[in-house]
Length: 625
Image (cartoon, rainbow, N blue to C red; front, side):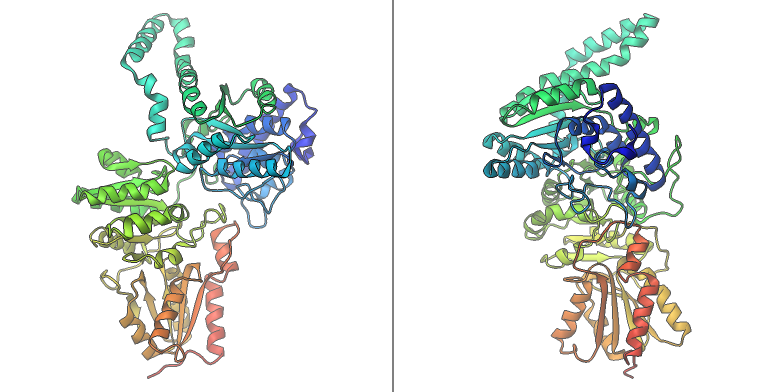
């Protein structure tokens, strides 16, 4: 069957196993074809093709619900639910999301993008259906990486207690984003690390290698035997003690096994776990060999490596600088939540393995753990995406700020991240971090500024959050040294003041130059600090001009611009200056290229320039001298 003929999962119900296998190949080719052109989550989606195909074959969606954890594995789900016609517009503005999205399809019960919450969501559905008298089936699809998040265990424990009719499909592929870490992974591998087992395995391998033909066939299969042993020995103890009926491990790529098994266990009542073993990147050799690199892939050529980004990113600057700082201070320790590559800590990990901690997908634990390290005298540096830091807001308040722990947070992907969309945009951190007592919030405006900010943060003696965008570095010569609560003034002027926070300093510089050529005198500022504000600078600006423009790549409510407004109001200057806050609206921002989204929401260079011209035409922008 051709994918473009599939309008709903009902269209595959009459297919034979051979036809389903053929369809799985077409799904893989379609995913690779589109992701190679558009970018996207390749490895995870290729690894989940058969289980998604099998689920839609035996379930009756949309009445029955499939809840994906993270959602980066759901491309096959989109193709089987009538979205092949739009798949060429994957992650494009006006196209389809790279994740399940509740506004996009009735087959997506939830919009998802973070980890470890699928069992909770599915359990809520199942409990509601029991109360409402519905016989709809509910399935949660999770990966082994999601089990490093505490919410998964909370939900599994509750599900076992409630005895609701829920199926959890647990896909074990030994990879989350970075390699799974923590007690669970150790537990899964404990038996296989026993000396007696390894002596037996090594001895068998040595003997078999001396038998040329036989050895070549059997030795590679020893790894498969290990996977089977892991599944047989552990889950029966672990999951069944939680109150689940355990089935598996099964080959997650065998439709011959998956389909009859799913039919059987979905007929059983109560909580159930189906453990499958899958391979990330299945069907595309480059992704099979390097699933982490192809986890979230940029555009790439078929059977070729991804092209390297030509210009260094802020993440690259952070990665190099933190190694430099750690070389000079052996109390620096680096921490991440399963994102060592994405956050730029890979080189730190290689150079300082004993001072590096990857806690898995567990941001709450990450933050509290760092407080313990800090209390003992170390200097923790947490590298985390802005959107994922949201998961640990309570720990930031209770275990960092309240305890006055001088932990440094390198908040990557601050602002719009483009094609990954609303679950991944880092647009709330300014507003939620501004309210944290004792904290310092920094937003450097260019590459060298980020280096200075990191040096400043690790020596500050306070909790410090350094936010920077997902973009190429803006190069600028430093004008003023870095000091607590001091804005960097690049030029003074009388027509208007332009305060470009963080990523917005780059367009602010270009606009200031453009206005300067038109005879306008611009007071150009790289604020650097969200908290504390440079009150002396703000007072000087208010003495020079009556038009002040603030720019920030975050939501306006509670943001940097509002803090400037609050300051002028507190000094009874609110009616003497016109403060225009340009930022993102109080809403969830769609997916699409970052540059296009900035233009749509009034933060592109041309949009900002036109808005300033409008304010000048209204009569603002006059010197007070």
